[in-house]
Image 1 (cartoon, protein in one colour):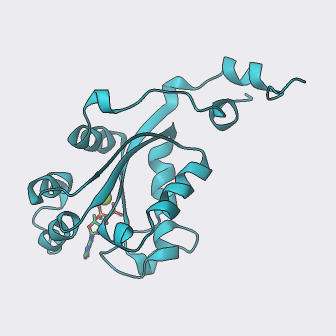
Image 2 (tube, rainbow, N blue to C red):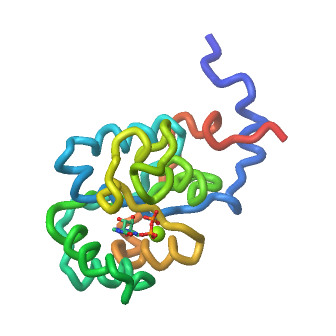
Length: 171
Ligand code: IDP
Ligand code: MG
């Protein structure tokens, strides 16, 4: 019996390698303490993104300052640094075509109480600053943020078994 996906040959001929992006996703301390890591990872898995790196770690204030350097000087900056460095976090790299914007949409608006239902923040956060998840906001910040947490050899290149359906094309 032929178990290959019907459109496999077309899909593999059109793999959009040049459009594949990577983004840095962090499950913040409240996400870990509130037992939401599995829920959040599951959403990315089900959406079809591919996990290519992960580290469970408690970061120093210095690293938190580097991650959020663009917010230095803002009134919430010191609280943000404490929040991120106060407890363990799960730092990941996810890969997919257009994953940077896709992840931002999945996360929802910054303040939990403003985030749309159906988004991660909109479903699980009603807080202003404790909003469960970080995601890079542009290709440039994704590259910088990934380099902050991972050496190149810690990012795994592999092909998902169902890659033809997840990232194949029919155009
Ligand atoms: P983002 O996480 O949606 O990209 P940013 O504006 O980049 O939002 O802010 C980074 C993080 O700083 C937010 O996720 C949130 O945890 C925190 N933050 C931003 N604005 C405030 C604020 O007004 N009060 C408290 N925390 C804030
Ligand atoms: Mg941001």
